[in-house]
Image (cartoon, rainbow, N blue to C red; front, side, top):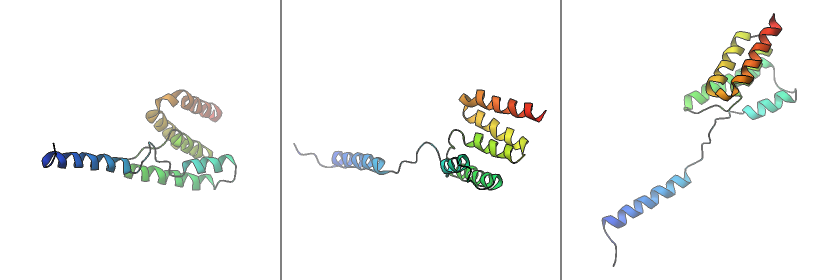
Length: 122
């Protein structure tokens, strides 16, 4: 029995939809915005100044928000570290609180950083 008409059209539409879904680019879970390269550069001690790194990470936050994407774990924690190194402790705490909000599993570590910072300021 030959199948023609609406059944064939529906099957073709389903097949094309499935193929189009396979061909769609993989956006990934997180928008990294060069974060990995910045951390690597920071750890090698050949990074730009803290203010330049902060500016790049802040631009990454804005870009990611505009795209409706998500930043990776550690992004706000690293930004907080840079704020702290630049003497901007209030902004460091704000960034670290944001890290805890997005990734609750980081709470213990972030609390340690905040408490350690407060202890060293006293």
